[in-house]
Length: 180
Image 1: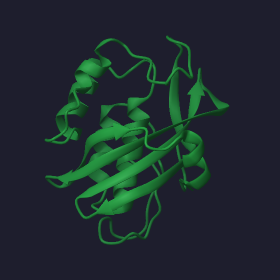
Image 2 (image 1 turned 120 degrees about the vertical axis):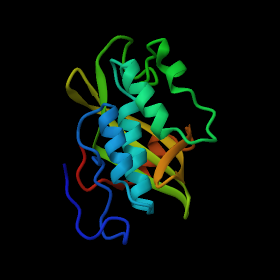
Image 3 (image 1 turned 180 degrees about the vertical axis):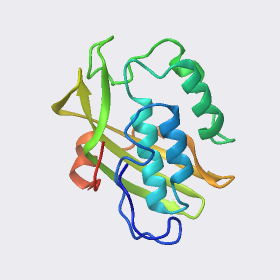
């Protein structure tokens, strides 16, 4: 896992790596990112990035992983039901990848944009490259905007949207310092 300098949570002395929580794409990674993400704008970026990497993959997360993430990560006021969302084995690639084809997201070519930040709320747009059958596609990219809230000492997920086009995000976004 990439390392950061300084004391986590006290200063914005590090830039988002795109790999907080590790390079896995399971519930343990998301929960580790949530635990490690400081109460800062960069912490919000890192948490949103981990969530994006977990949400968009095929095969989709296992039911136990979905339940673990939903229990810890979805904010108390969110209408999201992740268990229902993944129950029908959805294609979360936005039709970039054919149904049933293994894929995941990589933040190596990824970018982020902090849309807004106010002490206990953040809106972050995250972009990542699509890896199909183990190969990073040269042009396929995805973007998603996450609204986060700080609850009980952690960033939590309130809602997701498509506020920016992928093209727009990749033209204005800041690259991660690492990625995975």
